Image (cartoon, rainbow, N blue to C red; front, side, top):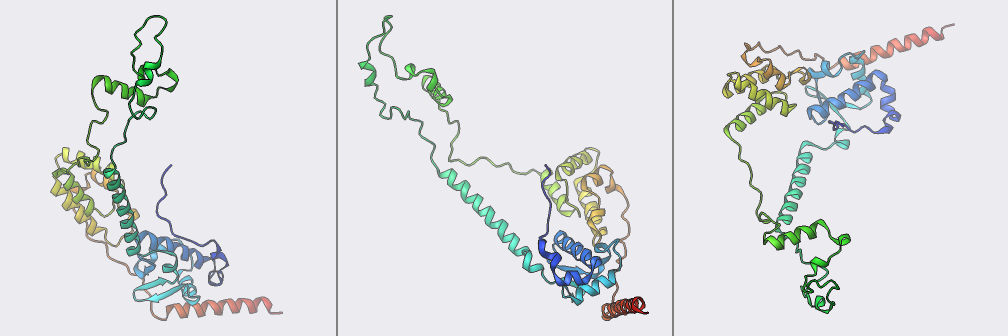
Length: 304
């Protein structure tokens, strides 16, 4: 099953919120779109005006919906856009998320240290911890004349011989130890070579970091075709500058970019930014015009 991706909390009772109901269906959908956008971009509830065309793509009456969301105090106008008022109530900040990840990493580190300090288990036979085989001398010799001086382990029946006991018997016979390494010695860590470090630099420079395993294979294939690591890193940096401020979903995956040899393409000029234009009075004017149209339609219906 594919693991879930990012998600944003949405209270099941939001449909009964007065502001949501009065803002209208179009504004409600825009509000949910804005929640998903803020979570994906980690903007902590900030909605830049230049990204509003991306958030509201395909939605009707965008300006009227924004005015309604502001009027019913679901959004707050700020410099350069809007702020979702209830974002901090339901979502943790980037600092809180980083602290949470650090605490989890510290717990795992302490757990590994405790396991490293724990001595190996003693495999002494619990049925005879003293190792005294005197009880065997009380047994009468077998009727067939076999030697009576046998060890206790050789008289263990098949029903209570476990794999661990069989390995222990073999260890005693051969004089070898079951532990082939020092349990207190931490495992050897693999140091990264130059090729791995070069790929890490490429991965950090590329504007869309998805499908890392496929990207690693494509990276090695590009190097085999004659490309150099510095060439790929420089081209990825230029592509990141070209895609700055654009919707990430239209940015090529790194494996696709490498496999198609896009690093040999001539760089395109950066796309012109198209800010979402609005004035300080747009929201109020649009809202009042919408209310006037609604009142006129009501009077037309009720006119005798």
